[in-house]
Length: 166
Image (cartoon, rainbow, N blue to C red; front, side):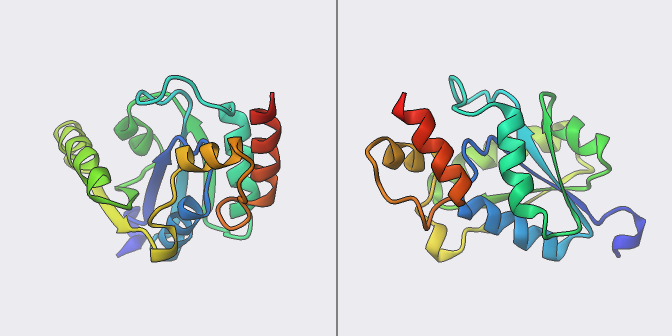
């Protein structure tokens, strides 16, 4: 089934910062697909400004996925379906935590399907221990000195502390 190029998936996101919830979805995607491209959106539409540069967000993820031989991390600033096509992906994989995620993703799926009916959107439910976890929540916790050890990798936690201390 995967021998004809259908084994490539894109996991897009802003990853500002990457959390263990994101990494769980990436890991699970890597177990299903032959090749996974983690697409880091350079400047997300839904956010004013990112805390970390695209290059730094890419490095954070690369550090964590280095153990998977089939995962690459790249930044992009094009339409998601164009990025997926550029990399030969037939699937876009995203995680869903709650009903609010579903509503937004449903709209995005319809738009993507209109532009690229050949690229399938696949949604993975968050693992229970990460169902509450969001990048914005992590940033808020970091701002007030909360414990991030079970939410993000150590290097990310250290950079968050440094960036939000300013």
